[in-house]
Length: 499
Image (cartoon, rainbow, N blue to C red; front, side, top):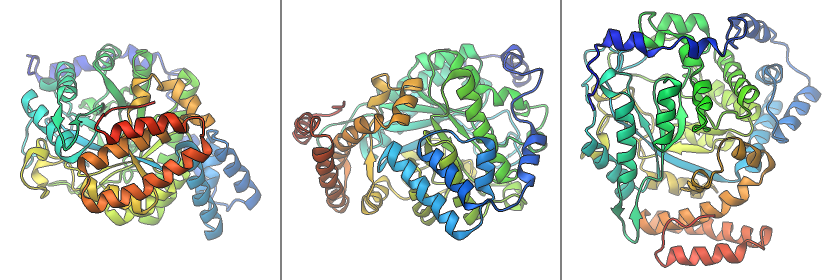
């Protein structure tokens, strides 16, 4: 920690490696052509029903849509056709992921940053923010709360971009999180998967990060629109380099040790329809070059932040109706990908969006550095990147999901069994992965209910478990005896059993 003696300016100059951008360009151009996308979106003609139904059938066969097909869906305004799109998106989700919802928690480890993004509460020039980074002991304390009191099995570690907290700190903190084991009611709480949301890194640093036990590597482009990107990210900052960020996932996949990558857009910076096509093109580019598309797609909206006027005056804010439409189109356009709706959204919007095809959500969320170890869940704008819309506990969210007919999965087995990257893509497209995941969801949910659930949540959860066990018994009779044996071992107190 604090191992570098470089000043910010020198560190910034050394951070970007031109060859790790240019090698991916096509005749000096990147894969986002604003003029082509603008032309694609100029057509506002309502598509005919047959065309839409053909596109929906393609999505339901778990095939990635073309930009033209996604643009066609974006033009749908007919209420009946919109309902058909939502129904098909939900069907795609059930086909690929069944009724499982994965939960996680963000863990902010530092909020120092050399960048100066107009929309971000943590931007360098925002003097009202209380700057802090966790020591490794504090990292373990945060992980202990998440794993031992709340019951999370997955976290996404979030880092600011700053020379004092570079790759060495990232590696040490990931290992510190994995080291934490905390007694629970019946078993041992632990974080079994650490994903990372961080700045773009070089191939060399990404390889180190992957070998440290990284799960999914997330880098959000924020906006794919070149002119908007330049306007809100000052040119003299690291983040001002559009292409260094755009090709972060190329570099990650080139390492050979990272094969799960998460794409995302901060909706509310540019035309949301442009961003949907941009996300799709990014996924298509990765599939073409590496045979691996996005493991997850995220679609956060701009939210209020302390001393950050941009967040309240943006002319590109996305309405709730458009938000639901963009989630639906993304679900249909990239049918294999996990879809993450976060606690940026309020509880009501999350209830409406989850059935449209989402597969992951966070809960008990706090986004201040060290906030899980504090006594209060009260939000303090000067300590966090933005204000959350939903601060409900994991227990509350799990209970609501159960009442909605979804089982919360705490499974991380696929990653530890090597079902990642191209392997997981093929299994997801074929529906085979769902069989493993359904059984592992049952086992991990039983484990969580016994270790963490309140009585009301345990009652709701056990109703879902009864349904899930009955489905497995009748749909996967050859697997049921082994599952039942493992289930009984979980009830008896064993932990971390998986297929």
